[in-house]
Image 1 (tube, rainbow, N blue to C red):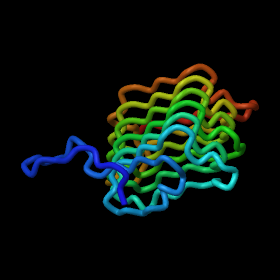
Image 2: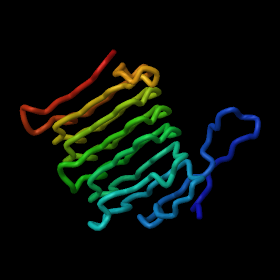
Image 3: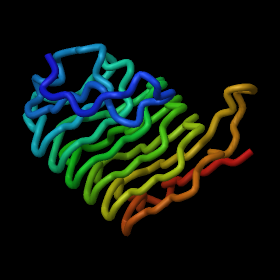
Image 4: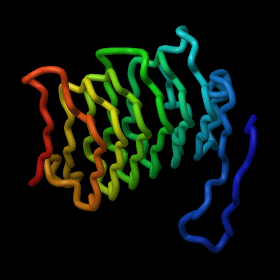
Length: 196
């Protein structure tokens, strides 16, 4: 059952401007509702911080357009992979999320409608891999201070859906990185930005 619905769309609109079914997540168990209509997840402050919560599976939300995570959430989650979410347009985290695990991976892949990624201060600070691939509509990436500061590999890579070869991210207009982002811990750290 949805906690709250925000907005509706007019029958005459070609593309919705507002989300139709937003799930407000006040506790981790709310994510287990698996309502296929949900197009927005808004996670409130401090959700999912039990040591038993080591993963989040968002596959049960196939029409997800917006993922907004509040401050200080999912501290012990060891991996966040958003792969093949065809409707996803926006990913945003507040501050100090995903901070208590090491050696982990953040990946967004084949989310062709994704336009914006915004990550708040001190998120993913101990994570070692950042992968952003095949997000053709991506316009803006903002990563605030002290995120991915132990990252060994960061990769921004496009993929042509026609030829399946590496290309630039054609819509990308802004990459804003705060201090100590992708700093890495060793000489072998990599930042990869591929263009066609």
